[in-house]
Length: 158
Image (cartoon, rainbow, N blue to C red; front, side, top):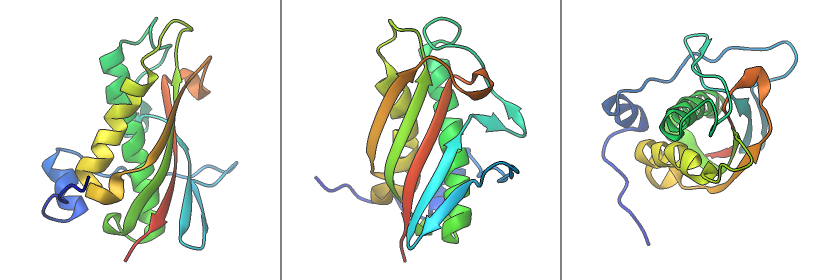
């Protein structure tokens, strides 16, 4: 099934949704991405906004499902910022695969619903270039007690 790509550039669609790409920071211990040919491997991104982690805790105990979905959208925005920087612009990014980690209780079985929030945003912004293979997994814990972390693989398009 083929869908129509929304009109306008990816940045215009992002803006229309009320989002902006965050500034990409750096870390002395690792790089935000590694590019091999046209493939871009984006390091795991936490839901930081303006230098602050937007939430902490375990989904299903400390964090509600809807709050985790908001955090997933912020984490994927951070991924998009890294990918856009590496590709030379957001319109040059095609998402290949996304891996969503959800720090959750053993009983919580809605990791895919958390991941759907990020997947939906990618498609809203990038159209067909936002469709991707995906894995969503529950984990015991994440860095800085974040409820969500997202890693992705992208490629550049002309």
